[in-house]
Length: 183
Image (cartoon, rainbow, N blue to C red; front, side):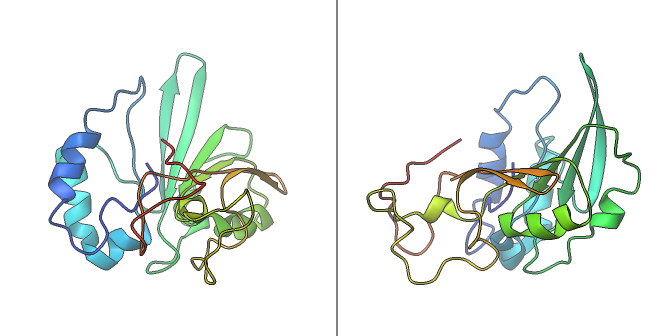
């Protein structure tokens, strides 16, 4: 889960965490935080998720043992409020090991790829543009900072594969056009 669990305050954090706790994944459900989580109150969001057994990865990795071997899962902090620390996050990871990175803002892929990281980065943040007409670039005059270059879908950024999920929410205008929610 790549962040923005709340928008303007943390009142909904316990309910959101309770709903997300219903997700079932064979090797666990993990989260990283988005810019709205930090702006609204990261400690409360982290507490709610942790109370529902959803670990929040903040500039850290976890080794996950699967039926097919070991997978590393990393979570980086939002570039808006905390500096994502790629070096600290990947200190225990070896380049030969499979790695998935959760990074809320997709444009950080350029920095991660420039560091030579061969991995899959999963991101959100952009809502896929939210208002997209006839498959063209979003109608909005101002796209979100750190979400201008990679809007939705799959990208290859140097050695890094990037997938940007459209998510389920809205910001600003309470609607989505030509950009359906995605889980």
